[in-house]
Image 1: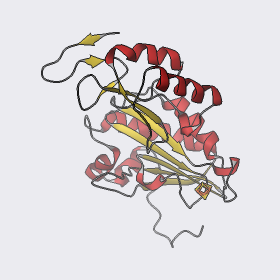
Image 2 (image 1 turned 90 degrees about the horizontal axis):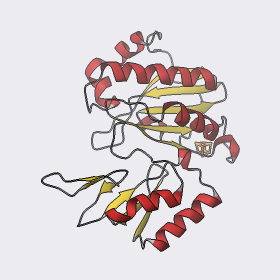
Image 3 (image 1 turned 45 degrees about the vertical axis):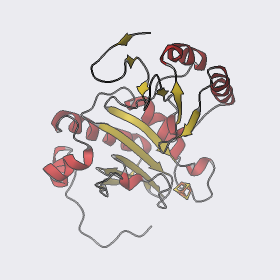
Length: 237
Ligand code: SF4
């Protein structure tokens, strides 16, 4: 375990986030699209009991945070879990949340869980100017909160719609649609280009919503080689 002291503040513990109070840390295992196996659930339960972790919290990003771990226990907890580390502080793709889509929901029009797994695998670990949250919905009812995530995808009968620049925080912003009617491969390719443009042009710590507000969505569309925003009648879902 690497512990370094900073003044002021608690010691930095690799793979953990300092919490309120003395010697209290949280960890967030990687759980793409909120999918979890029986083995992972058992490992989590074992760790919670063995290390007397006081809080196991389902997060809004469809992950499980273990809170209240002693610094000295952090490496052993990670080793026992055998799970990857979800991003919680470092900039980049923090999480991909996805609704059940065609895998389990009667309204589903596209495979949101499948796309979520592919997207998380492709972009996990990518360094970006700010944190990026992704919401994927299998139909226009948008249970994956796609319009208020940095990257949103919505499944429709004719394919995927890609949305960019949404935010659900204190300065909420509805994201802009970049393109519709895409195959899963086309949607992933466009997400990759949008993230690369954001990486190369946004200021440090600037979230996608603030980036779009600063430069304008039309400049993003132009940089990505997309046509201007359609000004036609409202879409019929
Ligand atoms: S967004 Fe649509 S497909 Fe996904 S859970 Fe909601 S109703 Fe079902």
